[in-house]
Image (cartoon, rainbow, N blue to C red; front, top):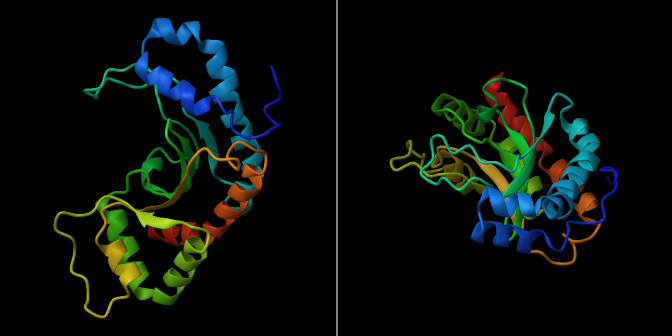
Amino acid sequence: MDSIHTFDGLNKRLPAFLRELGDNNSAEWFHAHREEYLHSVAMPLAALAEILAPDIALIDNSLVKRLSRPRRDTRFSRDKSPYRTEVWFAFRSVQPNWTEFPAFFFEATPEHCRWGMGYYSARPTTMSVLRDIAQEKQKRFLAALASATRRGFALHGDLYKRHPPVPADMPKEIAELIRRRNAYLCRTAGYGPLLLSGELTEMLAADYAALGAMYRFFCMAHT
């Protein structure tokens, strides 16, 4: 097996393999193509995560690396397809309730890749504290957000059907946060030359570093 410490870009077969898996989502098909899955999908993604681990540690050395498994947990899902057609890695908290702590992530789908930082599923109380801090420390929040947006990131997250009141004089960037019941920043790219080359590691390292200030801001909701 190749060393996971080498990375020459995502495999050009990755998006096509994920599409084919979506069209043939069965144990029989997956096991017949398991070696291709390992070489086209799993190993390059693991290598990318391994190389980026020291850069993430510079931001927070308590985060742990997690890679998606090929099998889906279908116990509570209407979709009983056994295998994932989106694969990912994340650097996340070791806390049992890690979903409400900010994490760094990278995800590959049949159409594109996306990466960023934020909550997987923040509790309402966490978002309430984050909103309060953003309004109290507006300059710090806006500076952290500007560092991220200069790298192409945008704020995402499900919107409230009925969001908390937004003061009339609130900066629009903070108003966007107030309207959301979850929050994360990400950017998306198609499978062009950069994603398929070793230069991807340098870009991602710079992107995650640019998210560091916002990561620390999100962490303040738990202190």
